[in-house]
Length: 108
Image (tube, rainbow, N blue to C red; front, side, top):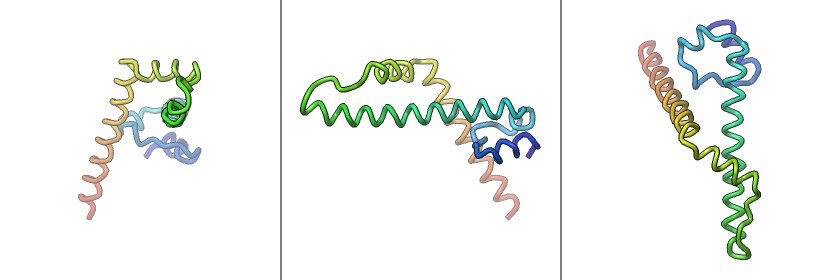
């Protein structure tokens, strides 16, 4: 692991979604931006899931509880480009975890 990647881990961030090549070539700034991007997506998904839950609960009482910001964020997250990027991140994580398992088996 490179010095930059270990610094990224020391800051409390995750670099799991990055490939080994990206980790080797990454600067601390790149790792920080990647972690911030991942954190933003996760926090937005949590916010939207809470809004959906509130909407379902409130629909029984009254219609349209989602705030305009939540509607705009949901439209943004459901956009083709964002969905493609999120799918790419999850595929990288899955590939990296499979790669880590293979390495672990090789050392056993």
